[in-house]
Length: 203
Image 1: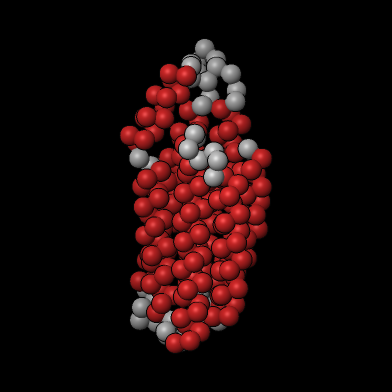
Image 2: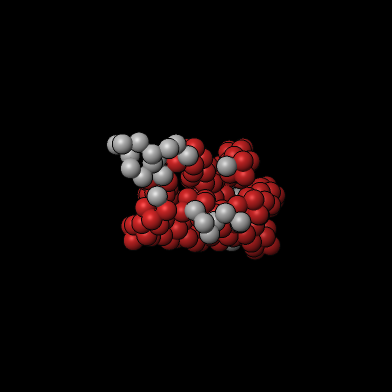
């Protein structure tokens, strides 16, 4: 839980920087990645809460203890990711016929810092992702953000040298498609049933 808390703090701080930076620079891919990081923060927060709740002992009315909270948190993570992804996709499509400028320099440096933070988060969570559904969910969020930061970084370089701002729209769409995939993956009921059965056998 200490690893999740550390990653949570870094994520909350930087998501604000990324969204504000995206607005100032005019980059939709930064804003998209910032929203994705918002779901990361929410996911990490839910994972922390679920972890604390799951440590409570069983009760007569809760024969599996409170560990089912982890399963519910994973479902909420997935649903939230899907909803925000669709919102960004709509925003990206509406930009195709709009003229706008992007500060590629600011975009580049913000994406670079985001990439480093995501690498740090993945490193902190890599050992626990195979044994816990919500840790796996948090790790998936960070993987998506890492790819998003790489995409925004690449887009900034391309825009700087070519001036083709449409690259920013395409990258934001790719980020959101990845987010949708992760969201559906986290919301997979068969996976949750398997995890629940595993916990039942342990009890």
